[in-house]
Structure formats: structure tokens, C-alpha cells
Image 1 (tube, rainbow, N blue to C red):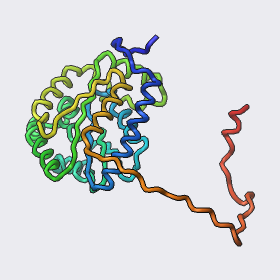
Image 2: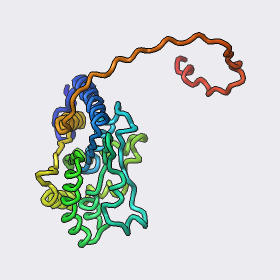
Image 3: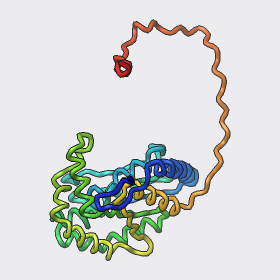
Image 4: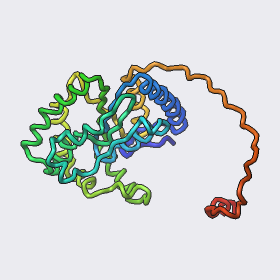
Length: 272
């Protein structure tokens, strides 16, 4: 019997998912090499409902990329000093330099989402953000930065099912915060905030791309596939590398093993 989501939708089969994910991840490696060689700058924004699969999508994107030039930015709550800055200021320092890819696990759009709904920003700050965000993004685009914005969408039924799953999983329990749980009682408020945000910031030069994520496997494949079409990379045949022969050891003598400290062999106990 095929696996389904909480809303009854059929999930992508695991074998097909893993095969296609592997292919797409290989293309991401090729894309990163192009970004490095050409000095391109890429910013990918991940926004959406809590438990919509943003974090897991980012993990699959970066799994085989070089972390030196593909960085994840997930900023904590602003410090006292940062709250006194121009709102976009603390994000600017995380923008990419030549040859870098930046993946933002939430972004400056916090102001239009959680800050708006939870009352963390004033009405004036909110209105100013909606006016300035398109201007700010046009400046990034004019300077040559490739900017992509993804909104991960999930139903209220599937979201609650994922929350309950996290409660039972000690490895993911940390993902549940008080703010996350309030997203259930404030579902409509978040919907209104998202609609207003799209109205002002879904501009032709920097559009929002919605990722349906009832099925996390499908959402990852769809998002990565789309990302690859938005970056004009060209595959480059890697230079042939010849592994040199190891030179013979001359006068080196390894110290006795007994002089070193080794971690206990926990793995061997698994065989028993």
C-alpha cells in the first residue's frame, strides 16, 4: 500500500525519490562549481509555515556542496544593538561575495510573518518593511546577485501531524517551540500575513515561488529541480587529476602505539 500524507495524498515512492534526489544533488555540485568559477553570487530564501519542510530541503541542497562556499544563514533573535539598526542591516553582512551560495533559513521576511502576527514589530515598522523590501531586493538584483524566494506551503492537518510526530521523536523534539505551537491557534493570522506579504513583495523581478509540501519528498525534488533552472550554470568537464605515487618511507619510524590514547572501540560491541 502506497504511503500517504495526513490529507490522503500519495507520497513519492522512496526508491524513486532517492534516485532522483541523487541526480539532482550531482547537478547542484556542478552548479556550485560554475558559481565558483564565474564569481556569481546566489541567495536562496526559504520561508513558509512552521513544519513545512524548509530545514530538510536546505539539508538536501547542501548535503554534497562545499561548505566553504555554500553557507546556511539562520539568524537568532536580534540583539539589543541589532534592534536599533536599520532593519535590513544585520542581513546585509551575510550576503554572498563572489563565488558564494547563501541559503537563508528564514530571512528579512520575519518582519512580514512572525513579527507581524506576534506583535514583535510596530505597525509603522511593518508598513515600512513592505515598502522597502522590494526596493532592497531590486538593489541586490541590480548588483548582479541571483535572488530566489521559496515559500513552503503545508495544510493545517499535515502541519499538526508533523508537530505530533516531533513530540514523539527525541531527535526532533527541539524543533517544537512555543512560537511554533502558536502557529496552530494563529493559522488564519499567518494566512493573512502571508497574503499581504505576497501582495507587496511578489514582484516581477523577484517573484515568490510556492512549494507544495504535503509530501516532503516531492517538495524537495520540485524545489531543487526549479532552483537548477533559475541559475544559468554551464557544466564544466573537471580537469583530470593524477594521483601521485607514494614515496618510500626513508628514516621515519612511527612511535609505539602504546604511547597514544585511542577512543574506546564502541563499534566492535555491536557485533555481539
